[in-house]
Length: 86
Image (cartoon, rainbow, N blue to C red):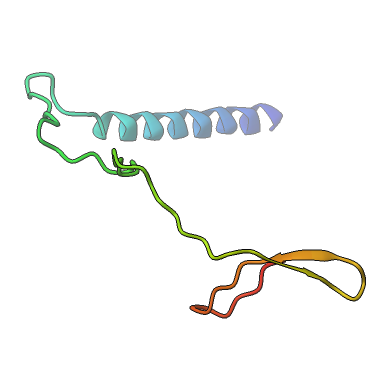
């Protein structure tokens, strides 16, 4: 009985290996006689655009304030979007 259980486990494992390898061979790449496609003239994506000009950033004048608890804060006023970052 114990040998039968061991044998059935081995048979199940061999069947699983056979299925996995057959799937791997079925999904093989292109045949060696076919030529690979070239990327000549293709647009490469996933990279940030590069500009040779210097990036100019205009920030508003910083305002300094002191809270009632003694904490000093710098304010950069922006009236476009009502946000608050801490």
